Image (cartoon, rainbow, N blue to C red):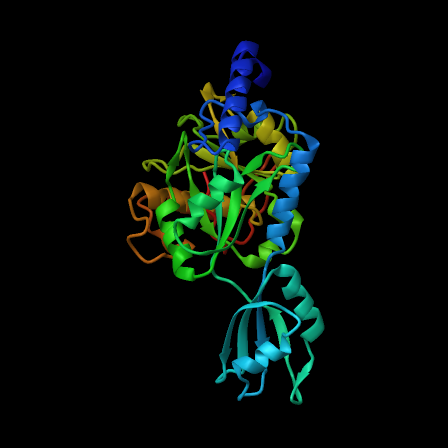
Amino acid sequence: MRRQQQAAGGAAAAAAAAAAAAAAAAAAGGAQPSDSGISVRDLPDLEPEEIEKRLAKTRQELSNRRKILMKNLPPDTTNQEVHEILKEYELKYCFVDRNKGTAFVTLLNGDQAQDAIRSLHHSTVRGRLINVTLQPTDSLLCLTNLPHTYTAQQFEELVRAYGNIERSFLVYSELTGHSKGYGFVEYMKKDSASRARSELLGRPMGDRSLMVQWMDVNQLSQEENLHSKCLCVNRLPLDLCDSEELAQYFSETYKPVFCQLAQDEGSPVRGFGVVEYESSEQAEAVLMEMDRTLVGGQEVRLSLCSPGTSGRSTLAALIAAQGMILSNRKGLLPEPNLAQLLTSMTNPAALQILMRPYHTGKRGGMTGTSMHQLLICF
């Protein structure tokens, strides 16, 4: 059935040509790419060398955490003494808090930071056992629903407008080398990240709306954690009210472990759903197959959501995010927590849906999981 719903061969060829032109313009540093009317499956093939180059860049930035925290230093430790302890490395920044016996240090790169931790963690300074670890960060954002033709340079230019950047990178498909439609940015300061989130959330990009969420830096500890298992299916027919029916559309290739519509009758917060698969590879394959195909007679948009959270939690955050954007609350009020967002919605139907168990019947489903982490994606 889905095969019959896809565009004819001529339209696909035209879309492929448009994709190639968009990619060429992006590579030439032209205007921001817009993949309006282009499916990710229509993007041109990349050479193996280019694919590896992109993946290597992501791996490099993923490991480039260069800020370390030194604890349990003697209370009279000076900045000069910290420089002496770290004389093997190139210091870019050093601040010593004598009251707490801690030092905040930025080294040249992530390799130096990891080497310093291996060499100095649980070593002694004037008879005191010190701890040396990576600094935690509260300035990490994930941006989703980016055009797949967006380049790393364009992404950096987009996020750099809001403050100094510690690191930024796109996430690429290991199969095709194309952007998976999301990326990460870590700012030097929390207020820069807050401003970026406020101003970028909901920004139109072609026929997309950019989404932004706070991320836990521990989510980026391993490369495999970068890849999302959840898809957002947007622009669904408003009369599609059965999650089982949606699951049928998205079970042809792989059976989802979670599939549910956002149903909030009487409210604009509807017309989308979340589908979660067992692996990121399955989610990517379905994205390639189903993006810009017909569901219930209407062409839908698929995008990968931020990684690391279950489909149920993602759906909860989607409803909350759409409620925020539609009510023009973005950036005007202090950020509420997820429970406040859901209970403040005008119609309680969404809350009831999210709190009730999900029954899968013959199709795939997933029991309830924690909704503690806020994700925003469309």
